[in-house]
Amino acid sequence: GLLLLACVVWNRFAICILRDGLNRLLPNTYCSFASFTFSFSVLFCKKDSRIFHFVLYLGLLGGISSMLCPNYLGQADSIFYPMTISSLMHHTVMVFLALLMLTTGYFRPALKRWYCLPVGLFFTFLYGLFLIHVLGYNDAMAINFPLVEGTFLTWYLVGPLFIGVHGLVLYVYERMLTPYPTDSELSV
Image (cartoon, rainbow, N blue to C red):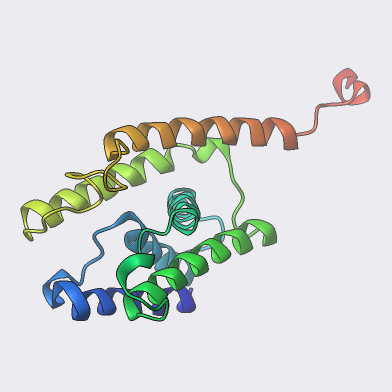
């Protein structure tokens, strides 16, 4: 949790100092929001807390998609440019932490907690609206512009799709890992 927090704080300061100014310190993307929320959740919440049933999935989606399509790599000639390397680091640590929690059993996916993702995304959307309308951000949480520049991938398409696929994956996961009762268990 502390390593992820350090990486995302480094990234936010690099973005603010090199591009946006300190008035844009609050996270305004899904990945930076997920990294902050995930790191604080790991530090302060109990094992298998409800917030993990939202932020872990958001972190996995954001982290893996940004590693597969790293739109932050063209920021400078060197990968060690502070905005680039810090972004790469916080995405990588976020995915590693999520996988570590899954493999150690600190977090266990559950269909009964499916609702946490849409509720969490709703509050993330409200936070984005707050950044835009109250603090004057041009965009936040990809509300006004596509998630990937030049594509049709908007919040309004990806959000419901993510929620549906998430529910389907949880259903299949529970059906595959829940053992069927044996004949002797049925006769009791």
